[in-house]
Image (cartoon, rainbow, N blue to C red; front, side, top):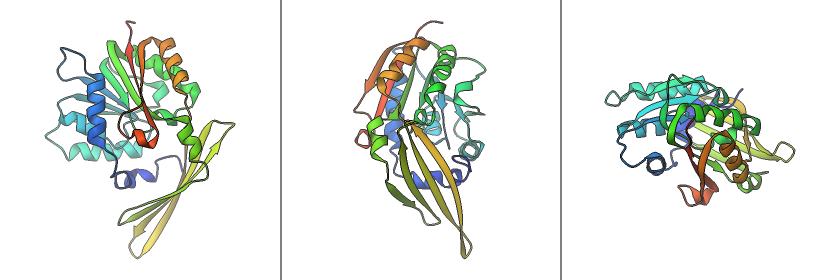
Amino acid sequence: MSAYDALAAWYDGFTGDVPYAALADFYEQALHREGQGNLTLLDLCCGTGTLTLLLARRGHELIGVDRSPEMLAVAAEKAAAAPEVTAPLLLCQEAAELDLFGTVQGAYCALDGMNYLPEEDLSPLFDRLHLFIEPGGRFAFDFHAPEHLRALDGQVFVDETEDALCLWRGEFDAAENALIYGMDIFSRDGALWRRRAEEHVEYAHAPETLKRLLESAGFCDVRLVTDGPMAEQGRLFIIAENLPH
């Protein structure tokens, strides 16, 4: 199975400890510019839309993009269950082929989204973001430090909820500069348990490489943040400002 085909239904249960409110605070502050009120924002690799809806509840207009129709289906269900919020526009697209109907005032990519992109997809993505973010708008994202991904080589983790269990095994491939991890997901099905497996690949991107590619695509004032939310888990942040087209 492709990444998130099976996991989508259980993703929110397995990520209940993620500090979404702190992430929303960080990205809202990173993307805000003086004199602006509510923003039109792109949530790139939005997944099940938890962060998307948090920012929508704060009055921002959101566009969520993800490659997984299964994850987007969960996001759509959550949006439908929150009629008090302006529903985000949800688009199923590959990040490197981003295609919006107009411009946004800012964009962000949270919780490993950038690590799922191989290096050859970064320049096309940054070019598309340069096109669709208004001049002066910002792009902010988080990613795992390369040394953090390497340290997960050989590690095994277990996440569980009342109705599901996820067994996670990591192996770092030095040739691909990527952490490859298999997931076995066991979900309760009446008196039985159903097992499904899928493979995930996260690429180790050096901060200096990301900075260089952003600047080549038309971004400036590229800043590395090392003390953002979940910093103790090896999570880094980059904030960049878009230059005029």
